[in-house]
Length: 85
Image (cartoon, rainbow, N blue to C red; front, side, top):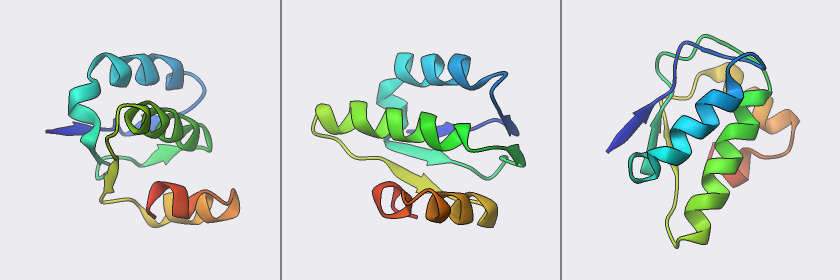
């Protein structure tokens, strides 16, 4: 199943989003970023947290439809390979 990120992921909603994702861990195998428009580096934090949790369970995370800005941010922070971007 696919988990859809909201349009906005910033400091204001990242903790709630992380909790929501962890509660729906079964749906986290694929993350659809197609709606993601307004975000900052906190989105990387939540994606990495989800990935870590899944890896601990022997699973992997797939990020789909990543906007170019997300790819650039991941590259700047040195986590693009970790996230498969």
